[in-house]
Every structure is written in C-alpha cells, then in structure tokens.
Image 1 (spheres, one colour):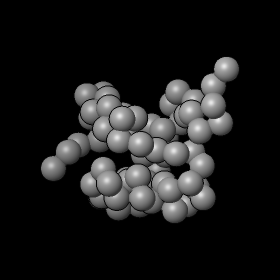
Image 2 (tube, one colour):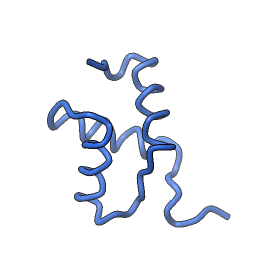
Image 3 (cartoon, helix red, strand yellow):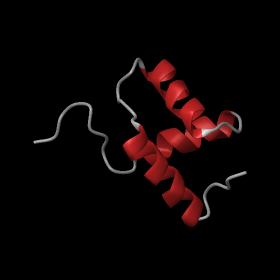
Image 4 (cartoon, one colour):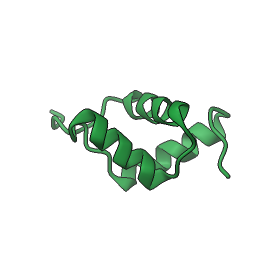
Length: 65
C-alpha cells in the first residue's frame, strides 16, 4: 500500500506544469511553490521532481534555459 505522501503517477507532472504556467522558475522554486500552495501535501522531493522535469522536457512539454 502506498503512503499518503506518495504521488499518484501524473500528479507531479500536472503540479509542475501548473506551477510553470504561472511564471518561469527553477526546480527548487517549483518545489517551494507546490509546498506553499498545497500545505506540504503532497511532499515533492528532488528524487521525484528532477526526473519529472527531465521527462516533461523530453516529451516537449517544457524547455529548460
């Protein structure tokens, strides 16, 4: 059984896209914004965030600068 802090697949991608839709921001800023707006649930750690950013970039959904 998954823990409550585990993200459902795709949820992190949507949170990242929504955050980036507000303004361009770096990875740490994305994590901070999600934490601030969600009341720290779900927890977003670097081990999940950066692979998600790479996946979104490889799929053409975002561009890195």
